[in-house]
Image 1 (spheres, rainbow, N blue to C red):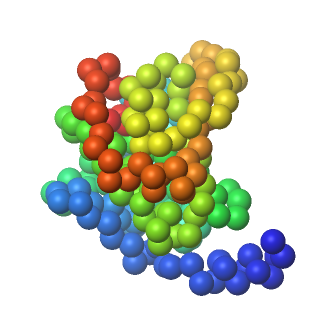
Image 2: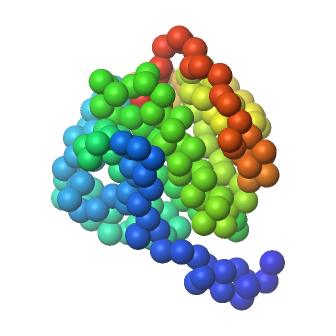
Length: 209
């Protein structure tokens, strides 16, 4: 694709800042400066951030988070997950190539985990990115030990691309392995609307479920 065509397509993409996705009591909206204190609290929590390699948290402040949110664009955005109007977690997406996005999710409120919300939030955002964002491929990765997350991703339609053994070390120097996944728009559309199986009872790591 010529660079001029790629730039033109960027200019015509819908403004995600106006995005508000709702499914019953669940909602996804862009993070704003008003969410900075909440995000800082979550990011400083080692239990929440362990999956990202920071079991001691990242030692940030609300002011630093607010400044970082100012750099968000319609191509790279932090999102807040709400349950009945209360923030319970976060998602993000970033454009990594033409028509390709990488996403992440955390259910940060431990009391709201293992209730199937992660699957619903993922489906909501993926549907939006494919149907209105004009993306054709979505990427994500997860810790190899996070079996439940892998089950959720594969149920949605993601396919395993690669496994990276002992690819990085966390904040405590512990080697970590992770799995790469991808989802093509056509795969997701084939599965959408199909009846899904009940979630299994394996423990939920890192706040996905």
